[in-house]
Image 1 (cartoon, rainbow, N blue to C red):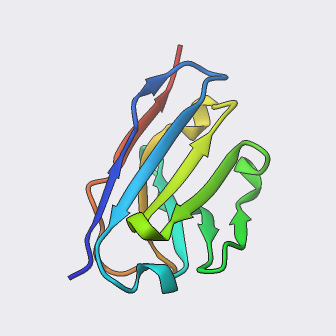
Image 2: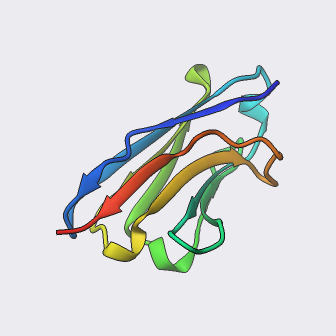
Length: 114
């Protein structure tokens, strides 16, 4: 069964930077498009970035130019580098396939606050 383990979230000040990682199980990781999703408090989960097996990337408008998604297929890991963080980036961040499986990890909490 596929599992996702996210890490790297913490409290950071506005304008700061943070790097998240997600380790995924399964030998087919390298064939899958992977996404980073986030769920702000009281809101629905949304896709913020995705990366195909070939390395093509997509970002939602609110994070373009600030977030960078990457992957290491040898480690079954996808990363999200975040800079110029804003309070509205506060959320629980998850990774999953695209489209997502109905299996989610615990996520990692990112809080942007002074």
